[in-house]
Every structure is written in C-alpha cells, then in structure tokens.
Image 1 (cartoon, rainbow, N blue to C red):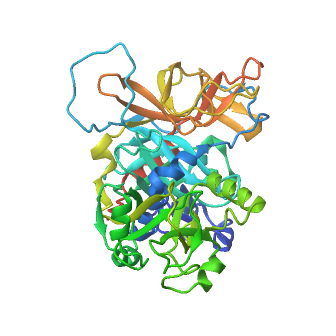
Image 2: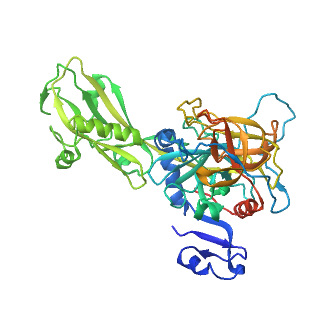
Image 3: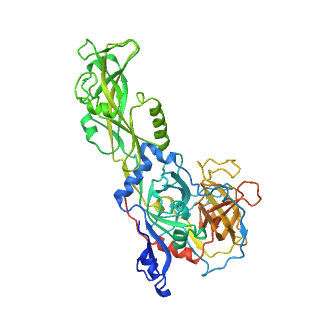
Length: 511
C-alpha cells in the first residue's frame, strides 16, 4: 500500500524513492507531520469487512483477543523527563451529544456511550481488539485510539486489516452498528519511525451498518441454492406420516430424511416403506456421485458454515485422527473467513422403531444489511484538547483484559473499566519503546485498555469530556511485576494538526 503524506501547502507526496529524493531539499518543501492511510477503499469493500465480523452471529468478534503489542519485558519503570513544553497555545474543541442534556446527578460513574472496541486483523492473521472512542468531527464520523491499534508496527506494515469500530460492544452485540474504517490519520514519526511519543490515531469511518436486521423468508430449495446472500437451512423433526407425505427427491421443494436407529438396516429405494437418510462424505466422493434416487447419490447442495479460527483448528485436528468421521472440507474463503463445507449422499434404510424423521426448511435473509447512520449522531462524540497543563484530573476508560507480567489476570475485557486521578507533573519516558514525552497516571488497567480515551473535565451527567490522551503503555513503577501506571502521548499542537486533518474528512455510506 502506498503511503500518502500531506505537506503543509496541501499538495500530496508519496513516500519511498520520491520522499528520499526530497529529503535534502529546502525546508519549504518538507512534508508535514500528517500520515494518511486508506483502509476500506470502497463501499463494497467496507460491506465485506462488516460481513466478516458479523457473520455467524458475530463469531469473529467473539473470537478476537486483546491487543498484545507489549511483552513482560516492555512493562518497565517509567523515568521522569522534565516538564512539558507547549509548542502552541492550549486549545480545545467542544464535544457533541447524541441527545438532550439531563439535569439528574449521580454519584456513580456513568460510562460514556462513545467508547467501544476497535477490531482488526494483524499481519499474523490474528483477530485483535483495542479500546477507542467516538470524537467530535465535522461529519460526525471520527474515532480516536492508539496509533498501534491502527498501524501494524510489529509487522512493519501499513494499517491493520479489516478495521472496524463497535461502540458499546458486548459479547458479540453491536447495539449501534459496525463502523468500518475508511482512512487512518497518524503522525508521520509513528508510521515511519515507530515513535511511541506519537502513539495516537484518528480514523474516519463510514456510516455504521446493522447486519442481521432482516427477517428470514421461507423459500424453495431452488431459490435457496440461487441466493448469494445470508441464508440458512433448518432441520425439523416430523412424524412418520408427515415424512411419508414428503417428496423424497432431494431436488424437491422440501427435503425429507430420516436419522436411522439401531434397528434400521440399509436397503434400496424400492423396498416397501424405505426411508432415506443423509450420510456425510468427502468432497471427492460427493463430486463423483450422481443426482437422483439410490444409495450413494447426492443429497442436496453442500452446506457451508463460517467458523472461527479456533473451531476450524479443532475440526482439522479431529479430521486428522478420524477422516471418515470428519470428512468436511476446511478452507479460508476469499474474504479471509474460515469455512467448513459438508457434503451429503443418500442412504436408504428399512424402517426402524427408534428412527427419527426430519424435513429441511430453507430460508434466506432479506434486508439483512441496513444503514445505521453516522457515528456521532448515534453515540455523540467527545471533545478534543491539546497543550494542556499536566497534573490535571482525567478519567480514563477502556476494556482491560491482558494479564499482569506476573501472570495474574483480574480483568475479562467484557465490560469497560475506568481510572481517575491527576496526571504526573513531569513527562516520562520508557527505554522499551524509546519514549521520551509521555504523561502518566496511576492505574492498574492492562492490555485491551490501550487506545482508550483520557478525558479532561468529564461530565458524569452528560457523559462527555475532552480527549487529551489515549492509553499507550502499561508500566510497573514499584517493581512487583504488576501494572500500576499507564501512560499516554502528550497531546500538543502537532497532535491537533493530525486531529484537524482527520476531523474534516467525509466518509459516506456503505449501503
């Protein structure tokens, strides 16, 4: 993927040989701090990404694990680096609300509607997630998170693959929809030099989509086979009398079959009261089988399941031990989904007293993808602040899930957590990531919380504040192998430059 830089004058320069050639030119031609990377390049591409995460009732979302860019050796003690130095005047951008303000007050901490998880696939093919928040922008379409949650530093590649934001995520549920990343804005120094002093990203997202919003429609077998969208076949147990009334031809509108019992014996289709069952076989056996009645003939079309990485590996392990019992074909499709395809042929049996009878009903899901609207219209957006003094009170939100360096794990990553307190007076550094200018907060949240917002002036009533940092590192100050401090890049004027560029970008709809 070609990286694009936006010079201060607005012209576009591509990195690589061209950028190298310009390195020695006058300062006036030097590129700005903004690195801009395309994610989903079209509405069709974005829809395929949303489908990937939503398929099989959010199986891919549920299978994702917390971000793990930090190792135990990285979780080290922070070192003081002196006071902050503003490069411009302090400033802020007001938040936006999704609803009317309430006058009610609460002593409990009300979680902001703007926070959620970003999901992505890294260079290793692993499904991962970080924390993030919706943030105010011109088109109400912007997400703030950590730079390493958008750009794959471990693989030294460009942006993460299949990047989406799900506000209010909970165990596969997407209450306000799935928002696919369109363009990521990061600091040039982070992308090129992996400078964690610039570990932040602002991602413009498409309108959200709600998948699975349609209702099933019962169709014929022929309509089912032609449908290329979401569909499902349901096996329903029926009485013997219903079974006999069914058409036994697998190509008929309703497929009827029997699960044989111990007393049933194989026979042919001409045997009185003979019953047909389906037997799973390999793809090769199915391909060779003919259509029609008779033992070994095809039974309907192959059945395709979209499964998680874990389920695919479990099936492959079982298949290796007993290929006859597990003959299905396990592959990745062109969208990167693991699929298990089952193939069936017929086997006719004499009636048995303990047999069960079934019919298969076929359904397609119409209207399964709907536009959910703009992110900011649905959940609001936090404000933004830069060049603020340190030692201010912030409230930090995130979904911690990773273990402490000693192996102890007291978070699940299922529900968001928060920390509260004053940031450190001095900027801090870490040799592990060559950090020199972070601000720190006493907090025991672990990985999974990275990318979560640091909110100044958080209103518990309005559930809004000003993003003045994002969780970047996890640290052990007292040397007991437990995370007790987290840190964020200091948001200065350069951060504001990146934010402003991202905050004025239009994204549009997927459907």
